[in-house]
Image 1 (cartoon, rainbow, N blue to C red):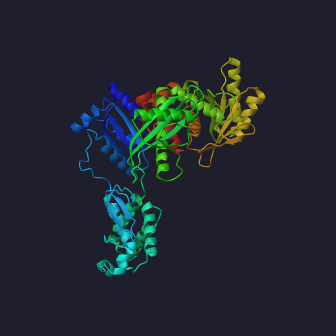
Image 2 (cartoon, rainbow, N blue to C red):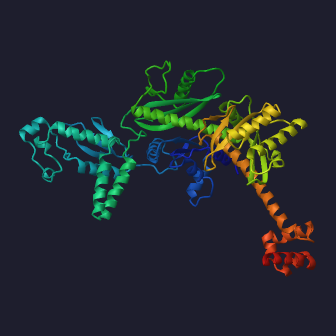
Length: 605
């Protein structure tokens, strides 16, 4: 595999599985392809994990030397952003929009009696909603609005003077009750404007009038067994629900904006810019700064703004910021938005800078696994309030059935990784019957007494597979009897035998961890591992016990004969059901007959 593909696959491995737009660059750093994706990681991976049937696609892949992406909220936003970027950069391998056609908007004029219609051109003097990535969806929306509201469809220029003079005649729309005759003043301006206000709410996605109307109509049609008509309305309903909300990828504003966001950690700061040209997102870029001193976020953001504007050759006169800074730029307005489209653009930029930081973490963890382990151990120390970093952790579990074949197991984790060579199994020797507490004390006493005597390195943390009771009996041995300075935690389970909470301290207190947290999942996986190890050992012991009870009581049969039979027939059940001839072929005539007669007599008795 070439170095180019290796580097690309490394970047792809940390891509988010979210909607977005990806950009491919050639060896000269020029954008050669822009694409949209419902799942960025899956879509981009598909270019590199096979040879394609299309020669053009193979040529594209051979020319990809770098990739970047912008995450968005939905597939629809990805579609619109892809359109913006293709128009802006006209990449070589994209199908270009030669006619310059753009997406449609819902237009509401600002006349005395406003009109409502679809348009692809945006001019001042009207209110616009959208854009809509589906023209059919907008047509459906307008059709439903006209079913709900008797608004005019004519293009007449209506004024108080034209109404008073009777300049216009009532048309067919009035007679079929699709209009209330505004050209003759038969509907008041206030009543008509009330309808327009409600339509604007629908266009903003803030009203359920359309969807409620459709649901009512669907129920009515279904009750009348008109299922085909109801299905058509359902298709309209699904489309409106999916598309009617407003996107911020393209707005009606002619603004040229630079939108900046900021995020950081202990070692680095990250700044993202979204460039808005004539109301459309046309570029996204994130840079990283290594912290050297105690630089404030304001200082780093100021440096990044100057750097990014110079690098991207931006001369926008408006800059959107997450917090106010002192930036002496001439003829530039700094804004920290609290609501509206600009706040949504800031949120989108924040989403991208946070995703960039997550990707950097993932990439560094792949290249340096020790870094991930150290981070996890630091989190365990902080969240469990431990005195030292738990580089060496040991976890215990018991396993028995009604006290029979009682065993225990210890799994060892070093630097947050299983150290399987240090795993230990224990047969319970001093406890009679099912007593988990006494069994746990025996095992812990045996393990740490021996480690102390041998001068072995003791663990930093002991984890018990159980709650307060298990922690208490372990503490009695470790702290009271042996006098060891080892911290103890417990993993309690719910009634479905799933890890439910983490306990630590004396007396034990629950640590507020959520099931979806990395730390919780790590500790739960440790509990699963010790349970697996203990239960496997217990099954092995049980199996050997069953073999002993069946074969070792047969007079004249020794270990060698038993081993030969098990090697050939695998189990006692198969040995007991084998014919005399089969057994004699395996262990000889005399011993075969002894085994056969033993099981035959057992069945007959």
